[in-house]
Length: 138
Image (tube, rainbow, N blue to C red; front, top):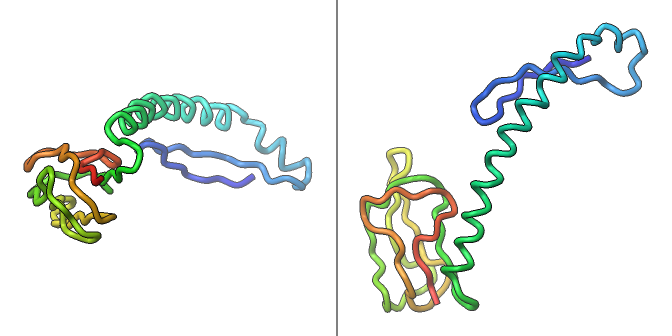
C-alpha cells in the first residue's frame, strides 16, 4: 500500500493505492476501504463542476470566430492594461496587439498571423480568463 497526498481544485486528499502483485497480506492491512472510497466521492464532485464551465466557453468560441479567421485568446488570467489593435488595422505576425498584466508582469500579446483585425473583444482595464477570445484576425 502506498500513500499519496493529492490536491484537487485546492482541496487536499490523502489517498492510499494498492500495488498489484503485492502479497495478499498487504491487502488486509489496507482493509479500511473507507479512506479510498471517500477519495473518489469528493473527486467526482469537483470533476463534474468544471465540465459545465468548459462547455459554454467552447460553445462561445465558434460563434465569434468564422472560418479562415484566427482568434487571439488569453493565455492566462489577467487584466488588459493596453489595447494597441483597432478594428480594420492591418497587422503582421508578431505585432503586439495588447498588453496583459498577470502576476505583476506586463505580457505582450502578439498576433499569431498576418491579416486584418476583424474584432477587438476587450477593453483596457478589463479582466480576462484563460482561453477567452480577445482579438480576431482575419
